[in-house]
Length: 221
Image (tube, rainbow, N blue to C red; front, top):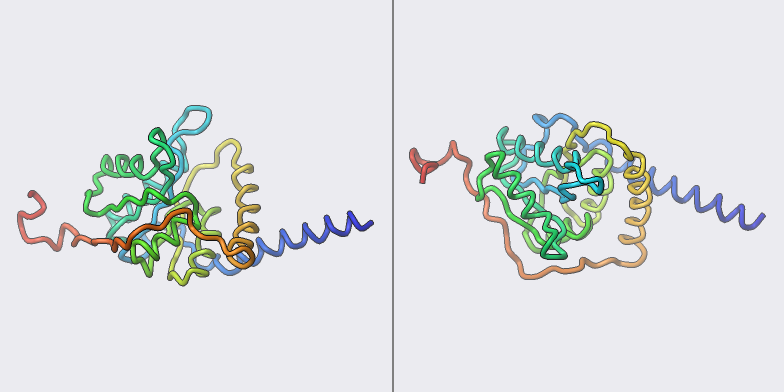
């Protein structure tokens, strides 16, 4: 009976933790790109370019499509591309940068964060390394509640912009992991005082004027 009670208590805490994260953030998730922002900075969360089965990752493609469109629409002025760069063979920020260049995003409109090893690390570094105070968070809708909750705890003013992705095989695994990650995030923030893996010196973002604000001919230089 005691074991059953502990399992029931754990299940209730698990559901309550998820409900807390969701209720605190759902009102700030926009699913229409043209309605996201406007803000100076969009934070794009890294993910693998390829799936384990060797095909293009639709979540990566959706984030890149959303980020490039936000720039074209003028809904954000600058993109902070934050991801994992643990080894020489795996570099999420550079992969995002290359993809966005192919989508005609200017180099001066992108900053690469090579130490965004987790959602938590990305947001702490956005605040403490890159001087971000307000931002649009660009990722999938199922990831945004946790990202926004962390941003709130860090004092960042953030709204979520959902990168729409077609449903894929194994989607339930991602969502189940996200449910567990939300509960773990509560522990990170309020119990064991998690710190980012790496910070580094202060490097405030340099936000270039958009093309339409440049003097005639400057965009061709």
